[in-house]
Amino acid sequence: MTLPLIFTPELRAALDAGQPVVALESTIITHGMPYPQNLQTAQAVEAEVRASGAVPATIALMDGAIHIGLDPDLLERLAQTRDAMKVSRADLAMCLAKRATGATTVAATMICAHLAGIDVFATGGIGGVHRGAEDSFDISADLLELGATPVSVVAAGAKAILDIPKTLEVLETHGVPVIAYGQDDFPAFWSRSSGLPAPLRADSAAEIAASHLMRARLGLPGGQLIANPIPPEAEIAREEIVPVIEAALAEAKSQGIAAKAVTPFLLSRIFELTEGRSLDANIALVLNNARLGAQIAGEIARSKRR
Image 1 (cartoon, helix red, strand yellow):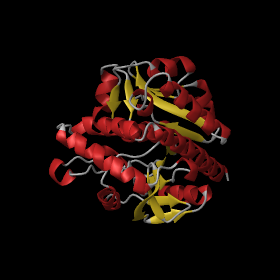
Image 2 (cartoon, one colour):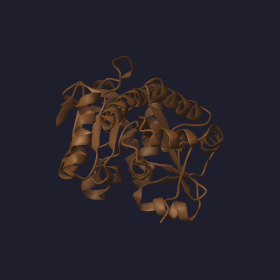
Image 3 (cartoon, one colour):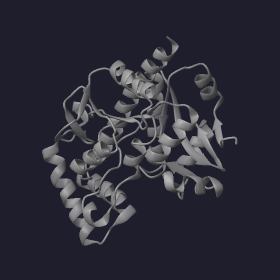
Image 4 (tube, helix red, strand yellow):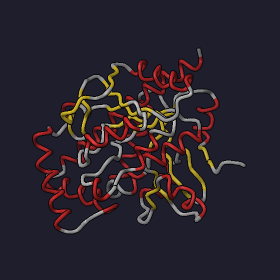
């Protein structure tokens, strides 16, 4: 059966030629920030991937198809869409069947990238175990996807609003390599350190690429999480951001905000409490992850040509 994939001509040619390609998610466009800043950020991330030697593949669901790469008109259309579905594994097929517009989360982007033959995906931060999950059972599908789909995901760790110790435990349970880039600490999105050690460390894109390819040789399922710390000049230090997060969490609890509404509320409130610094940091870390993702994709492509 033919897969419902539509490639831009540039991406089809790049994949056929074995050139490095980096997948990019689309929820940052539809759910991450307002227009036109969302469009400008998406364009900047794509430009960063190109400047680092790879071809960007922003992924979204539109008109019953998975678009691998968006031309300028489609990117503009997506950036102005107000009612896009936030798509994960559970609703990917339904979104396509309904011909709805869907923005891909980490989990959905991994699935679509793998279907398209893309090894590397760069994002901001992964979802994880929410605080209070022992009562709510609120655990992101991103973690299970990392254990199932063979894509290397570059992120600035897990979002700092999550229960990071439990997130690392679930990743370990599902056999996901968690590799800190250039340091021993596991980063926490806006901060370079979560205060927790990372299970693994790599100091070069070549090491990460070699691990990705070795996993394929061994037939191991699932991907890798590359935890790439935010650049020092852009970080909000842990001792500064933790009280802000705690205040936002307390407000969410007092207002009865739960389930899927929690993360958007917390990110919005943290933006307000940091006077916009959290969003500036978010953009900086996404660009940083795009650079590293392109380097890893380049190393994988060179190894496959040997």
